[in-house]
Image 1 (cartoon, rainbow over the protein chains, first blue to last red):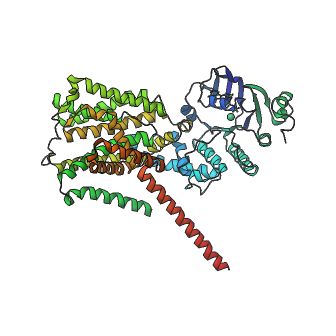
Image 2: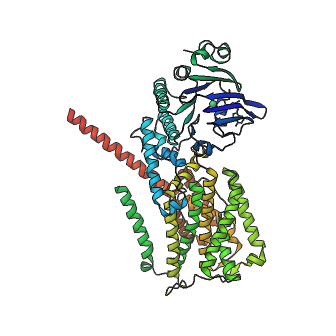
Image 3: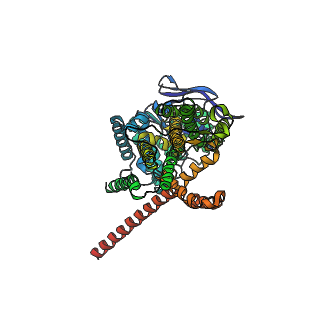
Length: 254
Length: 334
Ligand SMILES: Nc1ncnc2c1ncn2[C@@H]1O[C@H](COP(=O)(O)OP(=O)(O)O)[C@@H](O)[C@H]1O
Ligand SMILES: [Mg+2]
């Protein structure tokens, strides 16, 4: 098993946001989680990435129990994520935003800083190289010096993905990457997601744009009121009675 | 490359000016004020590191300043320990207390952190004020020694004090420069920007915040130690909240989260205060509103204001040259 959750549960007071969810991510594929607003999708991501401690259940990554690890340790293991709302440093330029993504693979500390050691210089160079590499990968070459506040919403999404990629992950969780961008840009983003998988990074995404999900995903899980109500290939999900009733309705699949 | 060069030239000329100042102006009062400003600046740099670069507004700063000052005072006056050993111990004591307080305080965030450290600062004040047998209470400590002679150099004259403290200020600035421009500095800035995001990309936020906090107490201690052996008398008022607010005002006016802000803010406020001394505490009636306006219109202080003005001018220049280019192009085509 690559990454899986076992009976993963999160309660907020009386509300069960994630309810005994068993899910296993397929390695090297695009996995998707869909479901109505408030279904618990983002919470599910927050549990996996260590932001909330689960009320019960387990998260396993490559045979290791990572349930109670803090987010920074989980990131170091090779699990990256983006947020539903971007958290970029708006006043800084694109390069400075992405450069810090490689920090977890570097070792320089305060002493290196004070004495400007060889190690620090080497690691700064590596961080820069990594930043240029991922910016090129997401299609933002020559954007390094732009201030983030001045770039488009879609470009910000790409910067956020570049930052996640700079951590050298094995799996990346994307929370609604296509929210708030137009259809044309959505297509570009879908291409980028496919490119990520082609480079051997497993993808798990939450998305509301059904057409995009059905075209992209190899495997889909449907959450409703915190419970997994279905799991399968896009065809299976589209023909699943419960899913249609709970979420897709009749017309949602265009 | 040229911008970098220009920057270096500016920095070098300011340092040169500071070094040559005693040859230009020969006035003991002037040296006294400048030396005091240098000492404040070191403390302001400490506050800048934790509040400006890491995003944690510590209001216990004067407390750590005082712990440094009192450690030196008590060790040299009461225990008659050698000056430089006391100097070193005072730094170490402050950093250890800073570490312990930081471990607890950094469990909180934002205004809770500010309020928590405000309380810590007040407790430090109370301890200093009430623990008479150790600190001398309200009477304070007198007769703190100046640094011992270094060979032929004595630190008794105003000019030598000026250079002595300038040396430490330059060292502090150099340290700050190195830190801010390193991966460590970037890490702190990432935490200030969004702690959530920082954790997501694998940064151990607690560890880094603690490093920043302890280092800020180190700068505070250094400032306090230099203050104690410059003024040679200390009382509990140096740990009081008004002292923290002085540091904060210097930082805010100059530019929080900028490298030159502490210098600009301290010099400006210290000199203005000197001019307005006849107003006594009513100075605040003038400072208060001015500060409020400054923070509303220039949240990054004077230095931040200059930066964004420069950026705007560059943008304008770029746009102008671009439109000029396209105009000539059109002219050529037409
Ligand atoms: N930190 C929190 N505290 C309390 N309730 C929360 C918290 N985070 C999410 N919830 C609740 O959990 C439910 C699931 O939220 P979320 O995971 O954001 O849904 P989705 O991402 O599927 O739209 C919602 O009812 C939401 O109000
Ligand atoms: Mg959500």
